[in-house]
View: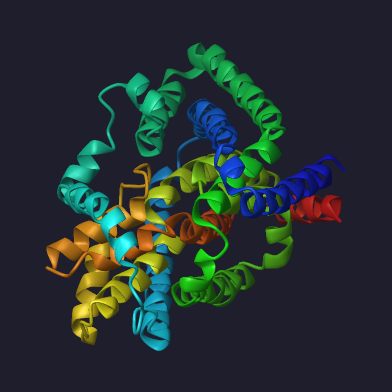
Length: 415
């Protein structure tokens, strides 16, 4: 009952935010602080929640299969993101959203300076540098910065040390277990502020961009959202069918974090609630605690699909016809350069700008997309979330640890 009430309030906040942003755009823009405050509240609980759940999950059940879980997780991520890439490429070549696009000169001048900075930010080190960076020099710095992968690495070693210490570490394990329970209760309290945060996010987004922007950008917005729907229906539903999990029941269970991800365009906003739900759905705590934060770096299905469309769009808008081989090389580069940038603001555009600059392609398309990035980000963030939740179930099933009885009980409670 409480869950249904929260969903209704979130939906009403979404509708009310659209109305306020459209009717009173200046007032809508002033509502943004509510969204910022809510996102800050979410950020303050992610690090302790992830640390406590992952440490207790590994130390409480043992670390025998941890290495296998890691390899299976990366393998699954590679396959699914490749499928997202293919769907994005096909959509961009079929719909040709950049062809005959009329550029607004004012918009071009407004955003080009930001695009140049993004191109510089997008050129980062090698994959070796990336893997070096996931090992924290200080756990306190990692916690303060909210670096999920660094927290995961520290938590794994901390849990292994608890296992090795044996009975003498039991008080520490008990403390971590209690902390995990407290953080889930903390998450429940923070979620009470979700409707206000969502109202602020939507009202400010519509107030800043206006409803009319949807008309001028209809082709690129429609192409991306259509491709996202195809990915969810064709890939994620098929994956759920293979592991014998009812996809629509899963989506119904995830309705609150899905609405959070869509309205705030923030993966962090939905992370705590999503992790809580997949555990209730039958995924062991240690698998959920490992797979979900890792997925936010390696399994950005929606962002990968968007990058494929955006790269081809950027070439089309400049009148450049890329061959299949050129497109594949650019896509491979985008996949590699997107890893590890999940915490960077406007990460998809940062990666896109840096990659286009590497291939000497015009950055005009990035300037055009920057004007509607918030609207596009809402869709890709939502698919990122759903994809990572499905991934936790797949890995749990692959390890023969998914609890189908728990899943059926949870589904029955939701009806």
